[in-house]
Image (tube, rainbow, N blue to C red):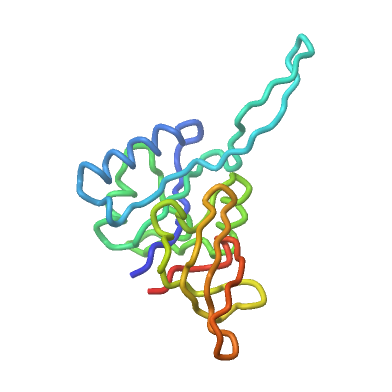
Amino acid sequence: MEKLWYVVNTYSGHEDSVKEKLMQRASSMGFDDYIFRVIVPTETVVETTKDGKKKEVQKKLFPGYVLVEMIMTDEAWYVVRNTPGVTGLLGSSGKGAKPTPIPPQEIEKILVNMGMSRVDADTELKKGTKVDIVDGPFKGMSGVVDTVDNDNNRLTVIIDLFGQETPVELETFQINIAR
């Protein structure tokens, strides 16, 4: 099974506490291998105060929602939906139906806007990791990671192009880790 992103509905204003509780529950119940990242999508905006000063504030992109990267098993789904403050998962019709994941291109837009990547470059991408290219002119090809630039979410992948090993520069959203 692969890890995908899901939208968790929460009480509005409780997103940060749900994130903390969910991470604590995943850790204490031994689900670190199923529940990976929990984020509250935010963006930095500049607001003008009453006295005319400008200040940067974090504004929630989707009030009442938290994004969870997880492998959807019955047990992991149970942990998420029974976390205090969680009211449901988007895409689940109820009656035991599992939710639908966020399409990769949609989650990538959200994460890039936040300065993050769908692939956790710090822990998942190392020299020698096999990857599939899912976007750009080399879409459909596979290769091996040569270098990773975590600061810029870029990497160099060695692909077989016309029988020769060829390095190509990609952004992390353009690849999936080969399974």
